[in-house]
Length: 522
Image (tube, rainbow, N blue to C red; front, side, top):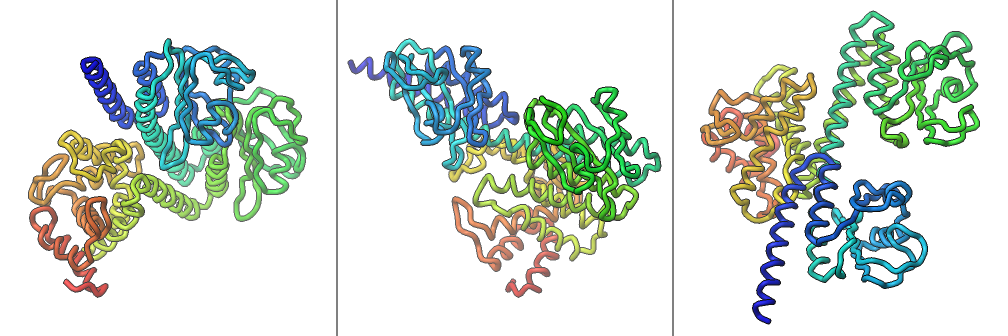
């Protein structure tokens, strides 16, 4: 018996190690679908199950994102409400549910009528106490044991963190794409005198921004709206003319208010009985509606969101006032700032100890740059770089970022990658090329012992040296899992000690002058 128990314990430990390895791999994966497929594959392998699925919460329903070995009816038709059915109960209560073989249940994962269930296990996936999805496995010859449930719970926890990371990263990619499109439009619209080219760009980028298949620009001509540029429309629709106040576009032009239609929705203003999802927004210049921008049929077949509407409204506003370059530039800059702040906040929010960290580092770095007499364009570049200096942490597993204990060598190696990842991310936006070196080198040390390149002194870009000082000060004056925040006076003393080794003495002196003017004794 002792030998049997020993073998069981060894097997359990081996399975747990496998889960932890899988967890590290999952949280290092940047995109959602590979995370979901990896989690399901590991769950099936871990328990010897033949079928399963991963369902994510969308509003008040659960949607199957990936599945293995399930009937086609499950994949096509099942979207249970939270609280209904087995998976819905798990999503609502946040508790795992084990189905024993042969037991009778009122509702199973795939059928609404009472039936004798096969062995199955449904586990909640939680992030910060909130259920974001359900992991389901079944098709096992024996009933699931308590060890199975415990191990699957660990896996579900890893998967939830990985899903959060992947969604955040995909949102980041989406935002970068939006910035790129808006930036290109701002540059070209403000310089181009070719109306056809401008209209073509509006159509092109509205499709790209909303990931849609059809778009059109309609401009006012007296009491009518005429399509002047389009893509994806039938030949007749691409030459359409409608009266103001008639139909969807005519109503938007008359009221100056946007309209959003869900897929298949019967709308009294629409002639179509099976219309795709669509958004129509007014094009306004100087408070006057000059046209309507229409986008329809999402590439994924879904409905447009409130974020889509907000984004298209911003885009339409920029397009409509293209003749006013100064105003267009101001709006683009405002949108840039808002987006960058949102991205920085999203990264900082992963760890309660770093909430608003990027915002504070940007504030200090901007003040230092001004104190050192740098040109306005350099100050602005440093402000952006400081806001985004930690954007590369999107690629670092949460288990490493939030670890309160000392990092293992391989974990520290992961942390050291975040400047490289950050530089790669911002490098996809042409206007951010100037700040790439500042993000890439902000963890270099003045004495050459930093990373990623180990360069020293004046070889480190000035923006990176400034961000390093601001970053260090904010870290010292903020609570961390392993220590309390230092008072400003002690933090300033630590900066003086680090000058010449970790930090640039000239930058430190500039920052100390700022602190002195604020009444901090140094």
